[in-house]
Image (tube, rainbow, N blue to C red):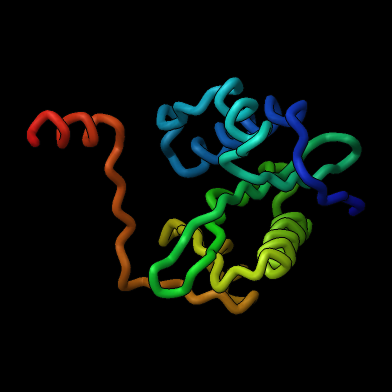
Length: 159
């Protein structure tokens, strides 16, 4: 299978949003996606983009993405967060996820980061196997903590 990994363009964002929604369905949270096409276009492009996105293209169709952004660790310094690595259902198992992860790792190395962070659901055994094969450590003793918009508002109300 021939595919190309490249930096995303603003014109790719409609397909990126479709893949985000496909991931939400796969993770059994189809109503959880709040990001809009305008958000992706405005936040990912311009003078100070909030994220960088790689896409995997097959026959001129985006079939996978890796969306990353910069973070800072008080213990390590500069790190990259891999928010999502998504491959369309039809293209899974064809090496596209590995190629996207390879691109994220090469890009991060060029930036001189000390670590790449991401989360994976404990039941996503295929992804866990890929990540461990690549040398990643799955930290099973850490819990992900989210304070959503409602929680932020409630917190501030109770100050």
